[in-house]
Image 1: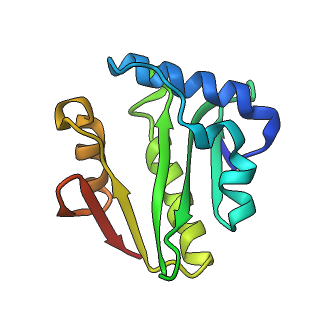
Image 2: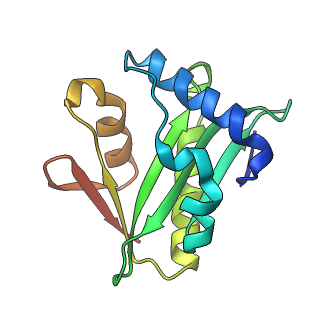
Amino acid sequence: MKIKLYEDKYRDDMIFMVLEAKDALGRVPRINADLLDVKANYFDRGDRFWIAVNGDDRVIGCGGYSRIDGTSEAFVHRLYVKASEKRKGIGSALLETIEAGMRESGVTVSRVHLGEPQTQWFESYAFYPKHGYAEYAPRYMKKEL
């Protein structure tokens, strides 16, 4: 597994992986609009987005961040791991990469917005606290970087 900055050549493979990940969790597999143009929604704004690829150069995970204007804070966005690749450290490696990118760009607080109902987002509610995040409002967690 290798983590690298997103490139447009991975767009369709990444979108398919995200849809598959949502379907595996029993959610309606819809694509988030920001993933249709990662360059415009992340890189052109000064934010970053990464993908994890396997040995066959296929996307098995993704995630990025977007800064909160006027602050030194940012939100983690679209952290997904392919269903068949979960529990192998890919999500943790992606989150560490995202947080390192945040620190490099001057971000001091990482935030996440979790979905509801919690029963559908149980993985997120369990994952982030293992990485030092604490709930500060319903459906929101943060971590000092």
